[in-house]
Image 1 (cartoon, rainbow, N blue to C red):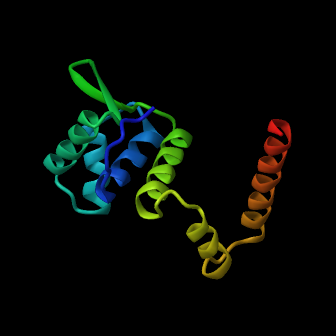
Image 2: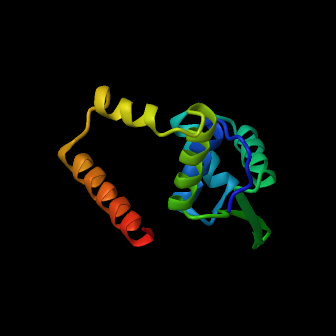
Length: 130
């Protein structure tokens, strides 16, 4: 499980990139972000090291170069970030998020079917524990 630590938007963007392409070097990440965002290699190194110190990344020296990998899967990362958002921004309540989905979000038919499946799964889980 991830350490409970806040993660900024730049950190999240780099962590997501590493999670999709690991193991990966700072140079490879820096090349991508230099081309897409104009970020310097030193900036990327600083952010990746910050992520490592927070427990989101690990590194292993291979052939004289550090390769970075996430400490968790993309699914676990997403779950952790959503849980943190709900706890911190919504006071632990899903009601504001559900209200947003019903009032403001533009949901595709597939999104609605996914939500219906989730509700059905929750109902089944509730039946098993009752």
